[in-house]
Length: 78
Image 1 (cartoon, rainbow, N blue to C red):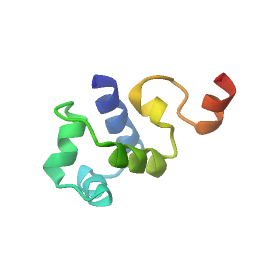
Image 2: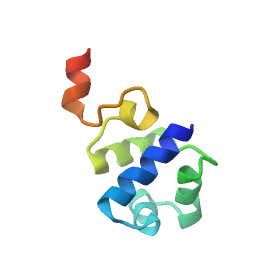
Image 3: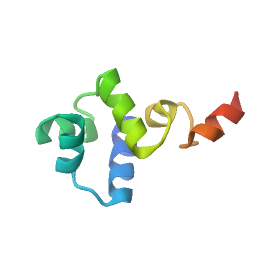
């Protein structure tokens, strides 16, 4: 899912953190996290929830189902 990879990279770069830091946060190897950003693999649900919580965005935003990154905007769209 290319949009997920793009958004993961954009969010990480926006916070100015390294891939290694995200990998450690998620309990992954550096290569494991790099595969997410390179669209070579997708995170399991638990990792996706951890990523969404860390960046304070919705999973729908990460998956490209909405362009509104915050929870409040997603709730008002319903």
